[in-house]
Image (cartoon, rainbow, N blue to C red; front, side, top):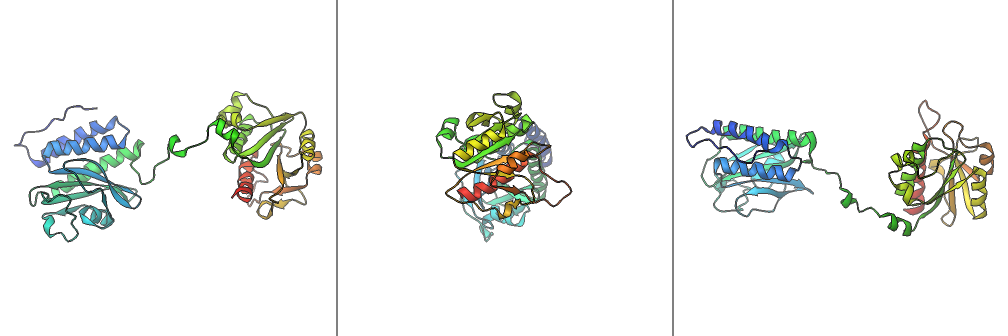
Amino acid sequence: MAENLQILSDGSSKEEKYRNLIAQIDALISGESDRIANLANVAAALKQTFGFFWVGFYLVKDGTLVLGPFQGSIACTRIAYGRGVCGTAWKERKTVIVPDVAVFAEHIACNSDSKSEIVVPLLSGGEVVGVLDIDSNLLNDFDEKDAVFLEEIARRIMNHAISGENLTKVQKLSMDDLKRKSIGEFKQSDKLPLVVVLDNVRSLHNIGSIFRTCDAFLIEAIYLCGISATPPHKEIHKTALGAEESVDWKYFETTMQAVKYLHDHHYAVWGVEQTQNSKSLADFVIEQDKRYALVFGNEVRGIEQEVIDSCEGHIEIPQFGTKHSFNVSVSAGIVLWELYKLKAL
């Protein structure tokens, strides 16, 4: 990243200064992924090159423009949609040049020394996500030439943001923002009174995915039966991503042993399978005082017949295409979310 700005002499034209600056702005932002750092350097570079009274950015957050990185005196912190020069540029989604702010009807006087102003919107997918705001302490200090070059700077900022940064209206939450439970907190949490039974599921990746889904919905436990692999295993971990450590599990040599154990402990056992009497997931009704167990079958054979015969009933996920079934981990995700809504929400 460039550390020293090369500024042309005062005898250079405005166009020459902008062209020289744009090349340096590219160097400033090309190696940096943090949007605030990049906006701060762009603001500083513009002020250092032209000596503008105030240069800064406002970013759209929660339906208002919020002050971002800037160079100059203290500024207005928030600007409403359609208010002032910045709000007008946001509303009209185009550059606004004001030769004399004193006669601009919607002008917000953040500083009385500001005499003229130009505001350029930052556009992403046709939507304004922020504005570049420049004030001068001279009247009529901006023209169409400024607009052309500042719009080019805004375009380069946004192209860089789209190629790998986060200058968008909606940002992904960080791991800290999500505030997920630790494994210890998960173990201590109240669980959904629901056990997932895997009847000879052969794919370790499917097993890992189901662990991860069970973690997400605070499922009580997973019972792994027959050929279903058990943790610790690197192939399970690839999709479980640690959920095999948070979710309790037991292993049974046969699925019938698991079903008998569940019946003995007063669980209502239902199979997720297409049968002559299966009930559509959309019509499934739970009893709040009951504990449930759901059996998911082998990827090819489905649930063993003996297990089907031992279930209280069977749940079928409606399908409307050419395929006769879902992948077992997908089925688990669909059914567990629906039961979580019925049981917990």
